[in-house]
Length: 79
Image (cartoon, rainbow, N blue to C red; front, top):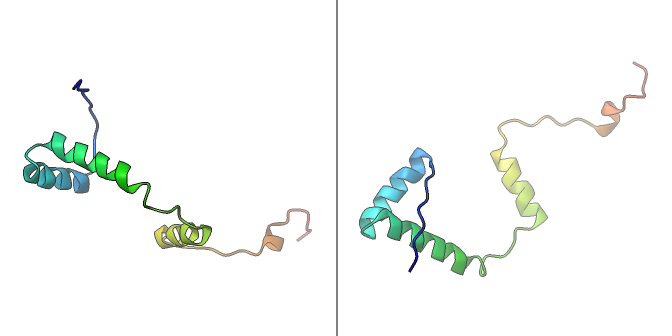
């Protein structure tokens, strides 16, 4: 099997996970390959998110929200 070299950077959280699973599966290469295969196999089982689910995910990730009525943003009004 032909092999390909990759080089990348990952977050501290994912580095810890890679080290953990690298030990479990003997090498980081095996851990990464298994993770990619799992993503490939499970992507067919995971349904796409609905619009409501997407909005909920966005809402959960926002620290602050400012609601403004769209009429307030009308620039043609004289103040």
